[in-house]
Image (cartoon, rainbow, N blue to C red; front, side, top):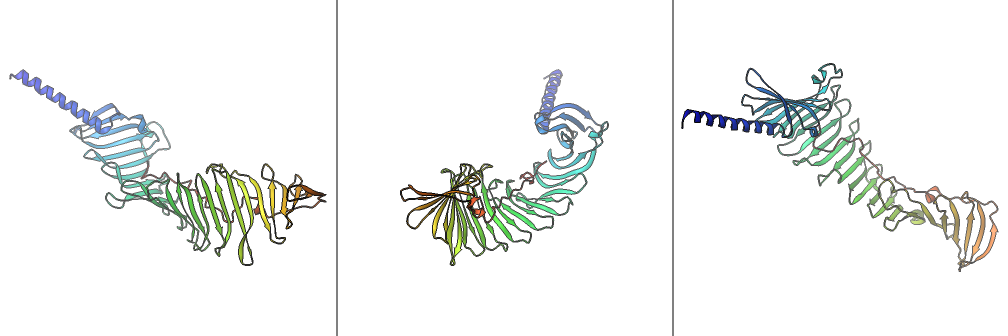
Length: 412
């Protein structure tokens, strides 16, 4: 083989190698990033500027390569949000980064100058945090995360405005799934403890605590199975409410501090009816005094409580008779009150539009025929508020963590 052939072969091999190196380098940086400039320094290292893929929310990326043109040494990312992030690499894997807030005064190239430190991160294998700290613009610590054991759980601590008092603590498993969380008040007392066996933040078991540390309530929430739970007395020891709510039905059982049944609510969303029973202590026994009949919405969302009262059945212990209060179409005003008599007849009081003034009183036979009618003579009727309203002896724990940060391993 002659010399020109050697030369051509050599040039061809070098061209292929350079092409391969460029391809590898481009793949290492970002397959869809567009190179816009390349600067070679005196020590033969190179700094390459890229316009990143718009999907990354990055405005500009600078990567510094070693003499071989492949090994990444360091880099800087200018984010669309204004953040500036400095990266360091080991064997082309990101091992740490430092983020900076943008300067408030964006004069000239000020948007390319680092402001106060925003965050410090360390990585394993370039993608998994082993340490992550985020600071507010005033320098106080916002949150910090750290790997508790190699390949194991990861702890995230969030802080109140003072940067010292922990507001919440989260634990993630080795697969970066949320597992548990504790939420605190500014005085350090525990507000809530949340646990997810499935690693899904929408499927949780929650315990709520009062200021003095006693257990207030516990419940489970599931997007399919609904919610069920308990509420406890002030000492956190005795249950005074047990409830279940899902897409098909609801049931709530209310007790007093001594364990006596006070009220229960039983509803079928498919049947569209809710029955509420209230109890009263008579001669040492809890006896049902009233029973409400409500329409029930077929949803557990915002429309769930928009039901109307149809009628109320109650037992008059003094007169030893059963009566029924009939409501108007809107379910807000009493139309009539019917009481059964011992001889089988009934007394029907028909009320005026105000729902309290008796217009007439009728006596009705067993067969439903009117025997007699007399004027009400200004007589009025009244009943306990809880008989005519959607009343719960103990409120449900409608607790929501609206101000919670995203429930992910960490976030930028």
